[in-house]
Amino acid sequence: MTSKNKFTSSLELMGAYILAAFWVLPLLYAFWAAFHYSNDAIHFNIFSPLTLDNFREAWSQAPFLRYGLNTFLLVSFILPGQLLISTLAAYAFVRFKFSGANVAFALVLVQLMITPEILIVQNYVTLSKLGLVDTITGMGLPYVASAFCIFLLRQTFKSIPKELEDAAELEGCSTMGILWKVYVPLATPTFIAFSLVSVSHHWNNFLWPLIISNSVETRPLTVGLGIFGSPETGVDWSIMSAATLISVAPLLIAFLIFQKQFVQSFMQAGIK
Amino acid sequence: MKDSVRNFQGWLLFAPAAILLLAFTHYPTITTFLNSLYTNKSVIRPRRFSGIEGYESMLSDPIFWKVFANNMWLALGTIPTSIGLAIIMALIVNKAIPGRGLLRMAYFTPTMLPMIAVANIWLFFYAPEIGLIDQAASIFGFESTNWLGSPSTVLPSIMVMTVWKEAGFFMVFYLAGLQTISPELEEASKLEGSSRWNYFWRVQYPLLLPTTLFVLINAFLNSFKLVDHLFVLTKGGPDNASNLILYYIYETAFAFLDISYASALTIFLLVLLALTALAQFLFIEKRVHYR
Image: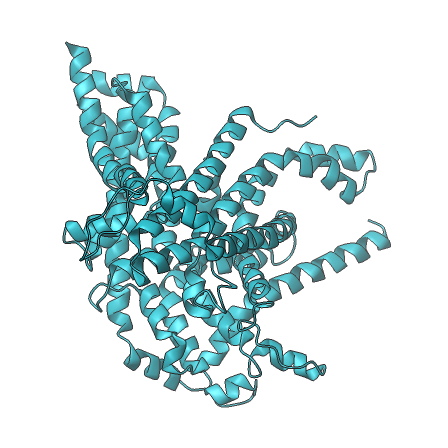
């Protein structure tokens, strides 16, 4: 390598780190501000004293534990539902060439274009007729059938050789036994990839939960944080930073620990 | 006989998904369309068929054109920049360099944050006088700016935040794309003495075209679906300068209680997004051609 090349590559490396610094700074600042009094935080007094008061204050101003529980319940309702329903549907598409399967699949794909995010008005009307407004069930229901999940699993199931199924059948496996013992284990990577993408999405979802929830008992973290941050309450930056950190901590910590799996899941789900 | 059993079993397995999709995708799509053709029901008079009147008033509604233009500007202002940054990020972390894992984590972290939290953090940066940006600007003698409060700066401010949030997400797709390119190509181009710059434009960039198309369309769809930050930052203001279609739909339905008009707006958004997604299907079917 010539010295000129070395010079450019170290310049590039520096650029890469500077870009990364810009990308983490906003979050790092919020982290730093949450542990300092807001007067110090605003004026960047680097050597000012640390404090946990902001967390205490945020924690006492809003029931974050309850919000967190609601988010957890919401995700634990949506994800297993999505996996179960999509597995059955994908199996039907791949191994039962039922009459009208092509039309049915086209109808599934419609949801890739018309996502529940856009149908907020009418879905609210439907759920209020069902008496499910302000319930976790109502919040999760429009997302439980996921065209994306059905699509991903169908692609995966298709790649599983028919011989495996025949062998299982010879050994006396029932129809559902084949699904459970042959298809599901072989599709584990797809299940994991979709799960991580789905959890991140629904953990962070805001607009629909905002519309459908109107009490502490159902409000997820994002909505709780949205109300917390409303300017009318008079903003204290450090308390707000603390509240923001409390809200994002569970998913963020999970991401930092399983970083590689998360990134790979997003990759896999994207390529299909 | 066997056939009809399998037929029945197939439908039975598909039934749960079918019922939920019908209830929360197909049925609301149809009723939204129907509602857009009727006036609102009120205490003094029942709803009546009004045909395309709702759409006519949409086309003569200046706010509709304003929010639509905002959406298009937002797409134009964020997508090319995000894609450019995403390619650079992917090229960086695709190489064996020190601290590669940390870099990838740094670029990707904003993707994992809810938009509402991102807005909370950036709200402080944009605050007039005490905000980070104004404090930095005052060192250089610039005057204080109400970044989110003035119609000329609010949309660009939101664009910067959006690029920060999304670039790392798009990076992932480019990373996946880069990994499908055979390393032999790089060795061959090195042997021929071609520069890295050349290698990128002649080999990597063309091979990444399908990725770019995929990201482009998804970024466009996302830019219409993501409005969470408006609730914290601006509520669409000042004077609708930062309002977006989906937020306008939310306001129309849940604040002004005008279901009929909200339905017409929803149909507009729905057709726009469906056509875009359809274009994607057709393109993927053909695959992008490169020489």
